[in-house]
Length: 350
Image (cartoon, rainbow, N blue to C red):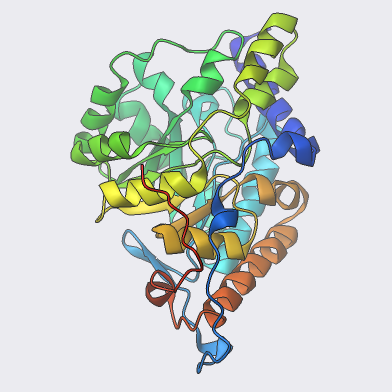
């Protein structure tokens, strides 16, 4: 099988496995967000309709602090999913991050990652995406800017997935020099650079090193959502590889801890909280811990696979839940929500 077809098949398998995940499979490790409990304000003295949940994201303003996080799939399926997500993000006024553009950059198929994406979403922030592993394999500024330009992106994500690569048959496991190459990209790119994990979290010390290199935003993508080790275990044909992958199914820094510690280490950096966020209350909790924006992928995947209307309905509910959390903490906006009192605040100090 050609490499491009193999990658496309793997990406589509990922979608099917995530969609089919049972609660026991998807909840192997808790995000830690459930321990964040707001003190209820029984007399908020404000209007629910007038609560402002808008947020700045680089040079643009979002109607809500939400990022539709990176999703992918085989080329034909990805094209449908990406169209649904772009149309929904534009209607909702929220940001969109695309999945890995490796196949499109290498000219094997676009998966809807072309100028049509920006036509569907002319006003919202769109984030391009390449894998850190590809930086070792020869990707540099030219490939990065190709990813940006093919979709008219406002920023570029470099995603970190060392665990997934390590437990995957034929994964890219030589990561020597990646940090320096990220620093070079941060200096050379014409757009802001975002670094994100894919579900195992970014530590406070690494977040600080990345920011010192010029990275504009960190997406912690902590543990508690999709376990890519478990996904790869499901895909593995080899019994030994399957067992090895499952050993690491609960690996990673829980999302709540990753957010709190990254915020403490990088007080002035744009911070995206993601990894197992399912509801608007989870978004409120993540913002209270220090996130500026919140990303969601797996929880909205079924909607994305269905229609743009389904995606709009899903995220409209998330926004409404966030607004209710603001209302019931007496928070007029997200700045106030960041200061909302907690009941027995969890100890997330490292």
